[in-house]
Image 1 (cartoon, helix red, strand yellow):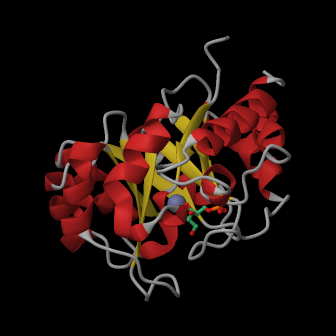
Image 2 (image 1 turned 30 degrees about the vertical axis):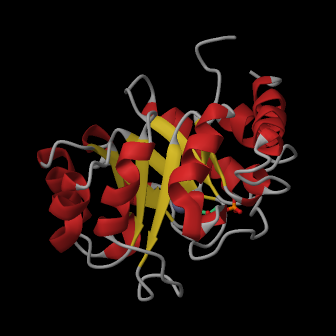
Image 3 (image 1 turned 45 degrees about the vertical axis):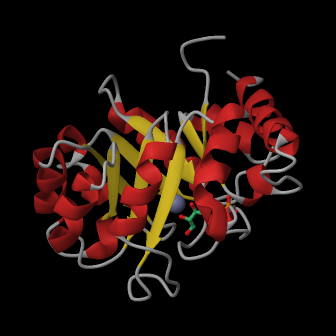
Length: 228
Ligand code: DX5
Ligand code: ZN
């Protein structure tokens, strides 16, 4: 495998909410590279999930990377709580408020890697003065708020342009939403490093029968790596 082999980050939004600890351990044993944790506030997005206490509770079950995606506004008052909960990466949305520069500074200041997420309708122009402040850019290939939505193809071109903008900076490009074995190679070819997948990883399996998680991860990985 080349250095550019893709990372797969299952989103626990598609796991059994009554059983996060076991679900995380099962999906890591089946080959997950990171665990993607979707925080929704019912305000920035029309759905609610959970907050810092739950993120802290699942932390001991994660032995890879805890990748926390904050779909919330405002973000700044909660950064310390998510950092103290053990986040490795905290990703905030460019659209979440007028002071994203300050938010990214605060995330790094709290000792975490800083991620910047872009909604499908957001262009790359506003990124120019932020590139030296981020460790990850998350390109949403669905409108955030729900799992199991349809992949938006216009985002492939955005990833291609973003890859060019990034140049040789140490920034990972993550894609979130609608990833399947069919869409994974499109994003991988465009320059993605990390693929978040919820429904496509968890479908058909359970903590009692986790082998389908592994098969699903392998299918996405092979499809993505096939084009590297
Ligand atoms: C969407 C979330 C995603 C979601 C992806 O708002 O940020 O992480 O779980 O789910 P799938 O892979 O089912 O599109
Ligand atoms: Zn997400």
